[in-house]
Amino acid sequence: MSSNVGNQEATRNNAEEHAHEAGGVNVSDKRRFTPEGELVVELDPPANEAASEAQQAEIEALQAKLKESEEKRAEAERQVREFADRFRKAQDQLKAENEEIRARMNRTFEQKIDAARGDLVAGLLDTLDNLKRAVAAAEKTQKQDQDFLSLLEGVRATAHLFEAKMQALGLTAVNSKGQEFNPELHEAVEIVAVSAEQDNKVIEEYQTGYKFGDRLLRPARVRVGRAG
Image (cartoon, rainbow, N blue to C red; front, side, top):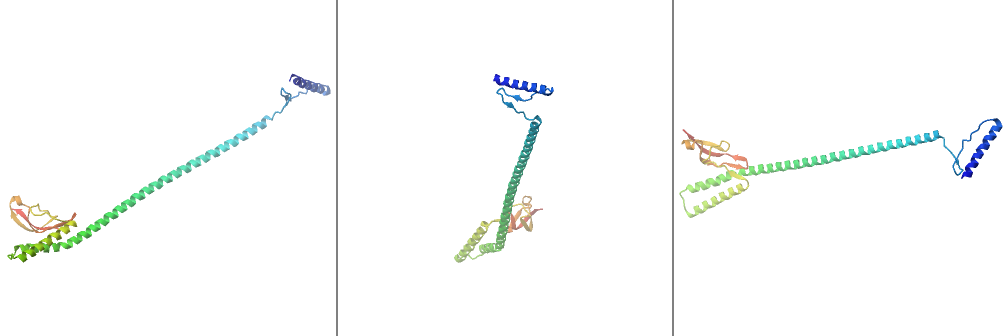
C-alpha cells in the first residue's frame, strides 16, 4: 500500500514539474485516491442537495395524500355510524308507534264489543221485567192449586236463569233499598215523609236499575224519604 501512495505522489510531482517547465503555471492535481490506489469520484454537491430536496418534497406530498385519505376514511366511518344510529332510532320509533296503534285498535275494538253487548243486554231488560212481574203477580193470587204452583215455579226458574245469563254478560243490579239517594243511579218517582234517620234514603224500589260495567243502562225507580 505504501508503494501505491509513493507512486501517486511521484506522479503528482512529475505533473507539477512538467507544468512548471512548460509555462511556469502551478498546476495542482485535485484528484483523490483511496489507500488502495482507486480514484475517488465525487458528485457535485449542489446536484446531491437538489435531488435530496426533490425526494423530501415527494415524501411530504405522499404523506399529505395519506393524511387526506385517512381523514376521508374517518369521515366516511363517522357518517356510516351516524346513519346506522338514525336507522336504529327510526326502527325503534316505528316499532313503538306500531305497538301503540295495535293497542289503540284493540281498545277501540273491545270498547265497541262492550257497547254492542251492553245494547243487547239493555234490550232484554223488558223481558226480564215481564218475567219478574209475572212471578210477583202469581205470588199474590189466591189460587193455590198444584198446577198453578208448578207454573209459578217454572216462571220463577226461567226468570232466575235469564237474569243469571245476563249477569254473566256483565249486567249488575243497582243497589237501592236502604241506600242513600244518588241521582246518578236513582230516579225518584215518589217522596214520602220519614223520620230523621231515614232522610234522603231509598224507602222502596219500584223498578230495579242496572249497570253494564261502568255504564248505567237505566236508573232504579225508587221512593225517597224526606224528614219533615
